[in-house]
Amino acid sequence: MNYEDMLKKAVQNLPARSETRFEVPVASVSVGKRQTIIRNFSEIVKNLRRNPQELSKYLFKELAVPGESRGNELILQAKVPPSLINQRIKEYVRDFVICKECGKPDTILQKIDSYTFIKCEACGAKRPVR
Ligand SMILES: [Zn+2]
Image (cartoon, rainbow, N blue to C red; front, side):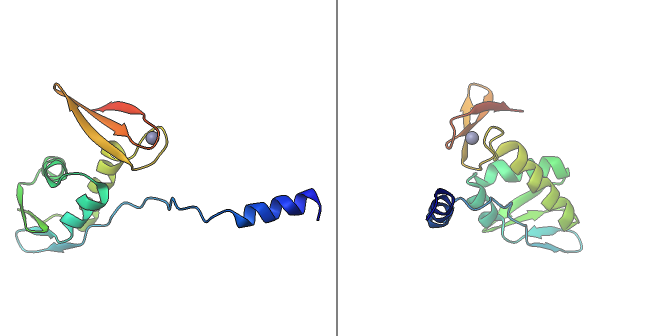
């Protein structure tokens, strides 16, 4: 076996990469006459490791719609197209979840005085969020 083959074999024997690409959870949305329900809201926040208040506050503000959480669901008091909700969740993930340095979602939010920082547990990077 020559060096190249050995190298090839070594690469094949490496354990499968455990870090699967992070996927933004997709909201399961029911649009009613006067309200819109995100059915899997608690699942989404669990997936993002954020507390429900943070994401719901963000969505109410960005969608300019009042609402409330009920059990595992988030109720929005208006008709909102599911595509718009998913767009906002993606933006939230981009701004508040994904580490800008290493691209991993293993981050936590830290509040220091009146500033909020996003801190990455994977690479240690820390930056303020707006
Ligand atoms: Zn990082």
